[in-house]
Image (tube, rainbow over all chains, first blue to last red; front, side, top):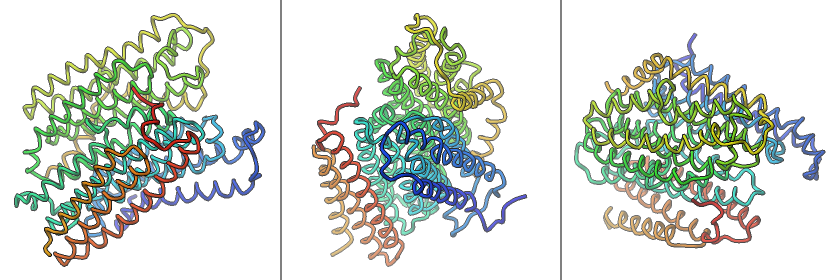
Length: 493
Length: 99
């Protein structure tokens, strides 16, 4: 069964319906509550039993239903004169966004903060709207749509960063993230205005012709766009918002924030620079390679002195963005395929690590690395899963991250980027050092307390899913590689 | 006046906005800088649209104006929230997160 070919928007319409349903459920649930209810224990308990987790479950099942729907969507259709396409890349990206959002919602279902039970509908509404924005972004082949989708994705993210509004750090992080995000949006849309002016069209198909003419305005526009997108994916030198935002925002949300918007940024980069530019992209390879190299160096070196595990993973995430940029810089079908494979491996490894952090921080009330002392003796399974996630991020054989790094290097060697591959390989060792510092805390240091860490069942489920993904991709990567290659091959015709 | 003049005006406005974002210490002034950057885009788009006789640029402008309004609303509400919690809107005082 496939959907009617006139319905490439089915996934987006379903997400929109889900967002409206979540919001309505929240409004109806709120109407039943006492408006003057204060933060007494009683009202917290009532809200938790009531609409709080209800909207969460609704969002979770809704996202899973839309995820299933993507497998019925017909590939290769387009509407609005080609400005909205449902190709392999779009469907691949949509599945990634939906899966990561579902894992994040599963992780946040047991959040006990007052804000999450009282304003649960707002939180989940923002997540669904942001996924809707990403989903449109993945299909957009037109500048206006691309820009609007970017904003639809970003604005709920600013909101969710400051969601715990009574905490002093939350609003600070939200403001920093917002200022950087909107400034980068302004740069992006300024670049778009030049591309439109020079090519006379907002369709991405018009860009190669404009570049072939050697029009300096198109070049300027593409440079501005690259700078703006660099902010969004947190590449050097536009990475400083990431650690602050990660530290202050709620961890299940950060798990998702560290993966999905970055993936969306890469999809936009692929659409603009690989699909949009054609062979004139070759002249950009040195610039992209330099960006990748500097990003890897900064991320890995800044991660070493970190004592807060969320900041540590934020900097290591910046380094991973650099490794993914290597795949983009290779500018070949295999390079893009390996970038997509890397994104999936990174999703499982990084989200899993953040979910373990959430579990530990709930029990220890701390995000410091020292909170992990002796975790292996207290909760062996939790420590083992953290170790596997860290090893996957570090790139040890037989977990997903190893293949991801190897394949990206492989693609770069085919393009002749030997120096970049050497640099990446050396800094992988540096990365292993700070991942193993955490492992040392867990396995070698003596625990400060003896009782095991309490692991909520739903969080354990989410961690188990990530674990399955990491180990599954590590032991048997072939089907994932084939899928990524099939998607990437359609971009080079 | 030719297209060049409008593009120069937009570039100057964008530059002033960017300068404000980078140098200002008051977060509301930073927000104003971002507004200037976004509005220079509108000058660009309308100028290109007018000189090429293609209306797409005008439509794009309507969308960017909407986005600008949304961002101003969200930005100011975050600043108000920050002021309620921290009693300051100066960027130099926002130093709880660093490292």
